[in-house]
Length: 314
Image (cartoon, rainbow, N blue to C red; front, side, top):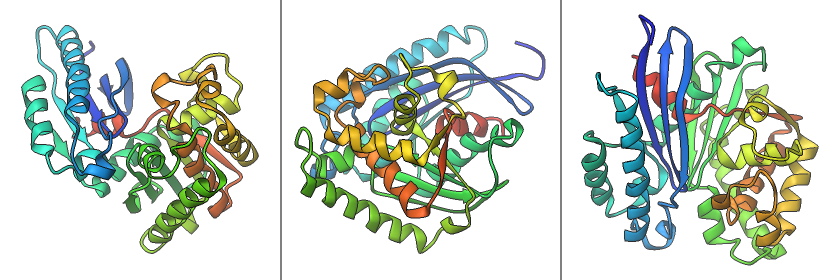
């Protein structure tokens, strides 16, 4: 590692997945050392019960123990700063203290159960830090981070001008509405109503209509992009900063909602942990594109995880 380079470790624990980024940061450059993702479904039934299920906690801690081992392997002589951020499912859970103590045992640091606003700002930083240099988009940006339990809407150019986190996400909407395989028209309409009501709230506090570029983040968006691009396997490099026309977003969303579990599982870019919830995630993206009239979505593989890593250099 060169002089002036700082190695950091960021962990993002969401409703559906837990992810790790070990990165070297120098100036405005962030270089991946390790980037991992495990589907743990921490938010299993949280919307219904208000609690984190014991089996979901154990799946999460198992993944985290593997991440802690990787961090030690990549910093044998000089421990790196670690930040663990938890989002929607943990904010909603009555027993989140069980999660906090388990994370502390694994990493030796207190996890931060961040507010929706802080989650939105971290996502914006991670997504947009490299956009201007790549010449990828016109500002202001609308950055949309579609997670398992919530979706973050953030508008800004060089900094955040408005942000809101709303409780629509691929896991939450699937558990609420899209339980049939494939879902019926009435249940899809109910999910759409939830999404539209959430966007009504967004428009009350975020200047979404001023945005010139839609930037989409997280697994639902990148999976839709991989399908739209016709990739034979998931290819992070080809998906990052790809531009998916609105027509393709509509086509892929409608197709996913018509497919059975087995048909979705057979899609080459599909992660097994997303098979059950991708229809809801695609539907959220579709409704955002339709409502605000964007001609395309710019897809970013950089998101809240990268924002957490950048925050460790401040």
